Length: 289
Image 1 (tube, one colour):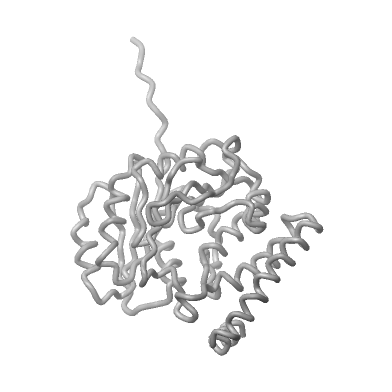
Image 2: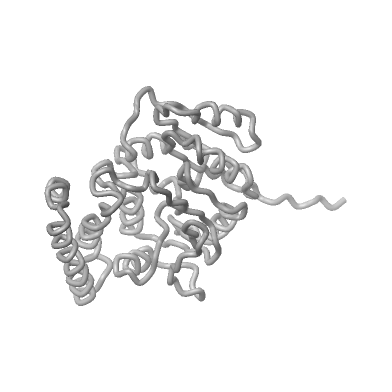
């Protein structure tokens, strides 16, 4: 008697969400994870000592279909520290994880589409895709004919502004995290960009899903804005220079590295002049030091 063939079990994926005072948005993020078509899935949430109704909202989903693993910090820590804290909740059995900010969402197909690419080649350590910003599709400029890239090639495209990676919405293999190392650098404001650059700089391959897989929501009190020059200036202005200098020499040719660096320096110097005439120079000087 013939036996029915069984489909191989899919690997566990974790969605991680650091949250602080998210009562207006976090339920939409939770619902977006619950609506995912991919299984098995787990949602890890760290409440960063919120002072609003965030804990009560999370508690309402204690028995949800997609399990929620959650803890509450005894006191508020930095955004970077909270991002690293939620990464510690990823179950050991999970092979991949993806960040979802408490004020962002994603379509139901997002994890399934990203995992299809992630599992197509065992050397793929990261998968990105198409992002909407406040409901509007952003240009990504990765050629539609190509789904798989050498990691150094994807990094080169990103540093030279030839392509956009929605760094807050990428899927990583869990073994991209190294023992004793904060996955999201605590000394970088744009720690998600830093994590993507570092992972890509370490080799292997990356994928890009040519489908809409993320909704980034920006609002006046968005946590993505820094507390120094925000909302007029973002730390990415000078941290982009750091990323170019740190990772550019290894993934760009000598000529291309000089071109990218000199082009960005012109932008950087114009920004410094703007700060000087707009009265923001003391704050910029403090942060640059």
